[in-house]
Image (cartoon, rainbow, N blue to C red):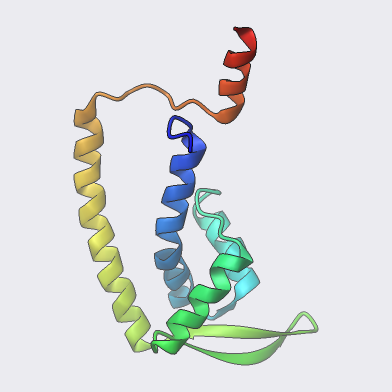
Length: 133
């Protein structure tokens, strides 16, 4: 594991945000899984781009716990499961957003105080550096 690459930390951020952002997306409007992926990518400007392998298990989990419900619907000639948020899902989103707002405020302070102002090294840049040696 290479902790000095920005890609690692980006993937960690992506993984931790996915559930909250999936719920937020469905709370905004009913949507099928593939549309959720596209919406998240656009909303986060490519910061959080979940795969189908991430989205569908999360949607099923939210449906099992009562945060979402789904129905079968024809979308562009294909049958899709369209997910809709419930009152429990909207309450879950509110709780999650509250926790993230508090965490982000504290993380902002920590990052500013850390003095770590160096730009992260990407895998590509790291490869260029080692080939120069």
